[in-house]
Image (cartoon, rainbow, N blue to C red; front, side, top):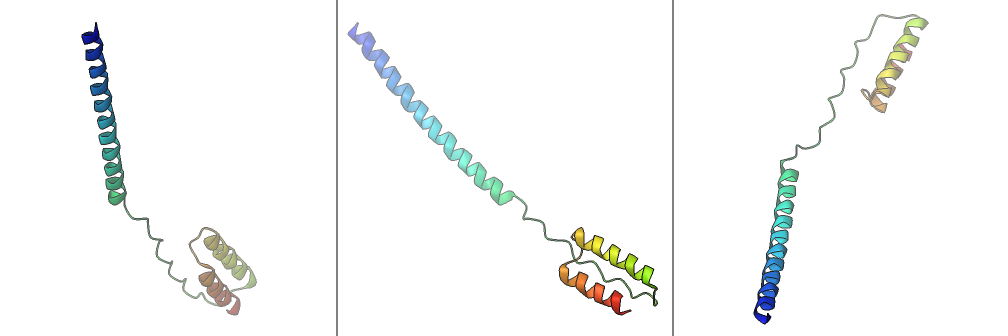
Amino acid sequence: MPGLLRGVARTAVIAGTATAVSNRVSRRQAGRWAQQEQAAAPPPEAPPPPAPAAPAPAPAGMDDKINQLKELSALKEQGILTEEEFSAQKARILAG
């Protein structure tokens, strides 16, 4: 019986060691794959280029100016125009 017990204990030690080594290798591989995925990930998208300024229309009435300002405001809310672009175009419309 002591020989059998020694054989079982030996098998348990070998199996435990193999499991520990296998887990360590798996964690190391997962870390390497994560690094490769990060390196292969595309860079964040650049913001779209600014929209070209609208050509200056012929002198317009007050209704036309209000409609242009509404359209300009919608473009700003959508993120197409920056605050500076919005202000410049607004000043142009109001001056005309």
